[in-house]
Length: 443
Image 1 (cartoon, rainbow, N blue to C red):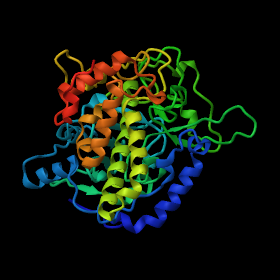
Image 2 (tube, rainbow, N blue to C red):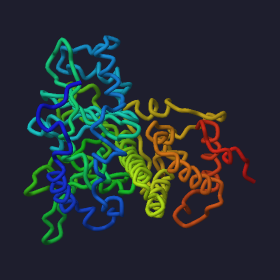
Image 3 (cartoon, rainbow, N blue to C red):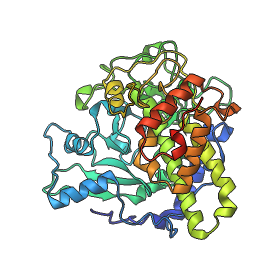
């Protein structure tokens, strides 16, 4: 695997990263309001070179494993001659469906000169990997999740080669480690907010979005296909992209779009869609992934430094935050029914696992909330299983307390008794290695 000739060691960028992150934080309207600025975002960086972390060591993520298969001849990347290059083959090798495609035209990439409303960047993803494709770009951009080390960043040259190689890009941490990634190398998804009609409002800045943000404030700089009833959003509005004079929200003609034809040449992409359900899903996944890695790193450092007794209250607080997010306790409710126009809704749910009644945490609701059964499907992920035992023990206990009905506190008041019982049953039957007390039947 190649490493970049300049900037391969992320540690060399620590001072610059801090300055950039501070500027980003000051620019983010949502963080400035305090509505989303919680303790984890405010703690900034976890040191990459700590002996318990050693982020620069060889990773064990899907892209790293694919690279090893390429080097040994067990795998091969085919080059498509229609302009897509290695993209279809990379997605196939990494198990990513093309129907996960979402399209962003804000200039939030290392290849920004090639990105515009007429040539949006395409993103494809599964639970562990995301692949970015830019028309006429020099590289494919990839984020890949190591269960313990977190997100590793890569590029793959788009030029045809006899031996294509993935290049690790720790220099990309200048943007991918900061307050919005909870201080660890992570992933982020943002919206460009329009200028409002209020006097003196000159913003238009980008801010992070996830399940806590109302739909009306999401997707500035993105294309969105699908129906969402009377709800409004900031997508499908190229006028937002003028940094000096950002436009207002898009008009009714940009909402409930089922086709992007006429906005740009969709034949240049693997799918003609930027699916609304895929957007909602990845927004949940981004923060959940960053939470798992951050909390895992904090616990590993405390164990290594023998400071667990001192930091345990803080760690428990972080775990409580993650448990609430896993249970969608802070999810902004949908104001109307949502429906995608690609096959993503079906193929995502088909990945299971399912209990004896056919239920899965991947089943969508899309009427009042994103998922039918309110517990994150990432409980099945390698990243969840890769957290230190002391973290998982606490998470399992808190989940059980809530789902069994023992904890009826206000933060979880939105969870009905039926939802709690259903999720408890699903997890019992589908999640291996649960603590023994999960097997007990509640009254």
